[in-house]
Image (cartoon, rainbow, N blue to C red; front, side, top):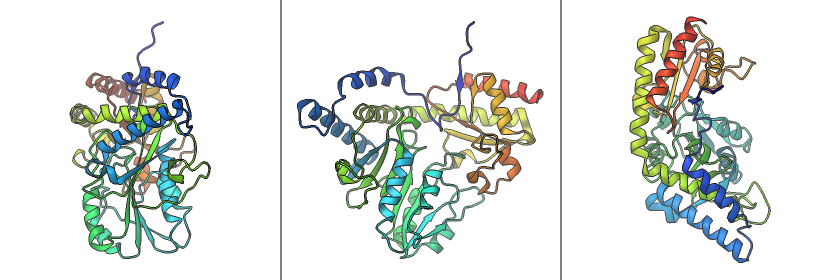
Length: 383
């Protein structure tokens, strides 16, 4: 029996690799398997490929300041966040770390393990879930050592204005460092590395149509980080271990392709997002509550609630129809535990349980959006 083609709307969790990557990745795996720290010709060839890939990535993401920037390779954005936070904060005896109540657990949970002498302060949010800059202005001070925030929120798609945050930092806490979680913006929307004077940023290849298992921490060369992992002094002695040569090369290729097509991709994704928003509202009327407005959100993420319905139940029903979506992690599997990001906002607990998250990727089409809408109508009629 012919299996119905899968429609995949959970790209914020993990996205399918670009088709053009696969063949090249396999070729690299079969060819560039030597240890890049070995002194023989095969090792040197791998090291040369790594350095070329690194420069390619830094030129794209950091532009004018690429020569003043380092990149560390990790297995994930979570690992990169741990290195950034623990590596920086382990040098501090006192001070304040500022963050928001809606950070990914890679940030929020890591902050729970820093030096207890450091005070963690939460930046208040506006009703639209953006950072309240007036409140931020009040809490910034000479004691502020680090501001750790996302660029695009993974659950709600909200874009935080890093340039505005940096302007306040320059005025009230010029020595504080800015750590940006760009996991949901890298390769998708422009990152203001130079204009926001970002000091550290984390990302992961599989979030923007790359290969699984390759994350990165990009940071300024004048920033000192203590090592978490000790070994053979690879990666400036900060993160020892043998590097994933094919993964790094594939990461660079993905960044190159996504950057070349960033505006074309954005136009397409905006059209799908707009179509979904308009049709959800027209077909389901007052049942639909959008968690963020389009003008302050990444078009790649659409989070909404269907009042009176359980998101997890609808997600499973759609899955049975081969349509894959997320619930915005509103429920932790069968435990019915509300998601901390959603409940940290003005969104009610009831709506948190009713939340669905559609996260778009380059493979998605308007036709798929229409199939999703029709299928959702059928599911709600028979709920």
